[in-house]
Image (cartoon, helix red, strand yellow):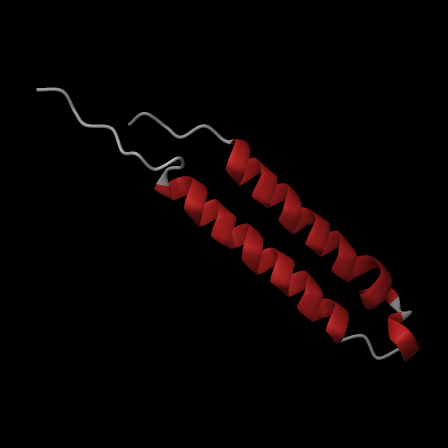
Length: 71
C-alpha cells in the first residue's frame, strides 16, 4: 500500500515557523509602544521596533517559501 499524502499545503515545521514569525512581528509592535519620547521619535520607535517587525516578515516569507521535508 502506498502512503497517503497529506492535503495540507505546509508541514508542521512551516506552521511552527509561521507562528514564530507572527510572535516576532507582534513583539516588534510591542517594543514600539514602549517608546517614551513624544510621538515615538526615539530609538525604540524609529529603529529597533521596525527592524524587528521587518525580521518577523522575513521569517514569515521564509516559512511560506520553504519546501516541506519528505520524511
